[in-house]
Length: 633
Image (tube, rainbow, N blue to C red):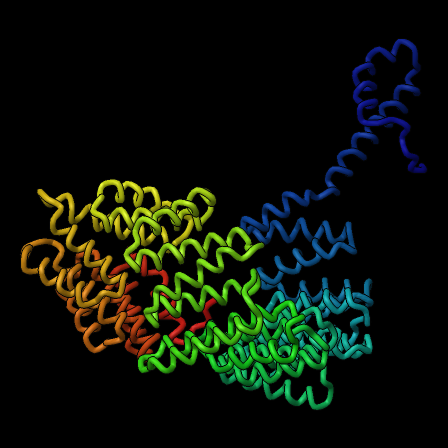
């Protein structure tokens, strides 16, 4: 009897069964038999259909629960039903492999290969089965077949490479990419992928070679490769990068190679060599000096002032006054010359006078304007702080204040500096007036907070400690780390030394001594501190007295006297607020003044280890890592 499809659904069948008793009144026996047989056939057909539909969700649940025997049964049925489902096939083989049913697994793979000979991924599965049995050679044969039968399109290469990569089979991933590049007739098509693989394998020479191939194919990868190289290459490996770059540049003066070579010198702090490459690149591309300015700034930050000055001078001389970087370069070159002189130990009055003459020569040539304002302020600082010529410093800024067209932020900085010089000159009223003007004009800005801090400090110098402390407490929340730290330091200092006293005599003497130090009246400051120490021998200010004396010697570059006093504070008053300040001051002297970097590193480490709550802890850790040679972002 032919097997015709019934013209009703299961719901129809249920209706038919319900109404079946009613039919016998209208049908003969033969008709009823036929209907009964049809109903029976329908039920059997529905039952068989349900039995032949394995539940993939149940199979997945069994697999997740580790019931691989049950999962294998269901996945096997699913594979029979959906021959081209890679997911069910892979899960089925996984189950058989975990059950070590190697013959059955091999049989399934062979069947799939017979049905889909174009699918080279099955050879990888075949190889995994051999590998699971310890048959390494046979596994390798199958992996090679997968690579040899790979199609020459990008998607096919990536698909096979990722299959090997998931099992960390790096050598076969490399072979896949290499064959893919050959098939696509593009030798650098997968260079970046190969570079990444060699990086994972820890082979820096091949890694560098492939990444440079990738750069040749895609110049847009330069920033990414710089990040990778900075994280992956040590000093010796950076030398290898430079060797490979030199070889390539001889064959092809690719600007990206030159840029990367210059960058590599910067990473090694060889700014002189970096500058040579950046100059060549600037001339080759006819640029405005932007790259040279960038390396100059980095050299200045690293305190290689000779390289920085040379870079700035290149921009000044080669690009001229029409360059957008001319005044920036001139300002920074002068700043570097000044830092080169003043950060040393043995600079002379003649060195300062020579520097002063350079500033004045520039101003004579280019005049006073908004563009030269920062250079004028540098000269004023040189006069006030180093040449101790306060009248000249004040005169320079008073004249600059009258220059038309000054930007408001420049004028605000000018007034703060001028206020400092008036304070150093003893004119407190003029000083507070200038600070107040900046505070009012920039109430919500950082420079306004700085003005507020300076006014509060003036109140501290004048003995109005409670009002000053109230201001410092507010400024502790400043967005500027420097202002916040200084405000916190003075607030705690006042609280510790004022609340314990019945009078403010002791802290008033100390504040007066601090003002004298600010005004460079060092002999008077020493006398004031000696009076304080003798008059209040049991006062809590003893560590502060030692600390301020150390600062005086520090300002006078007498480090042989400053360091022992700082150390005495750190040793005798370990739990007081000046201990970490003193240690940080010593570390700064060793690093920035005396170039004794190992000593500086040891002290920085002590700060962040023993004084983790210090405001200097974060910077101390950063300086320690830099001096240790770590790559710090």
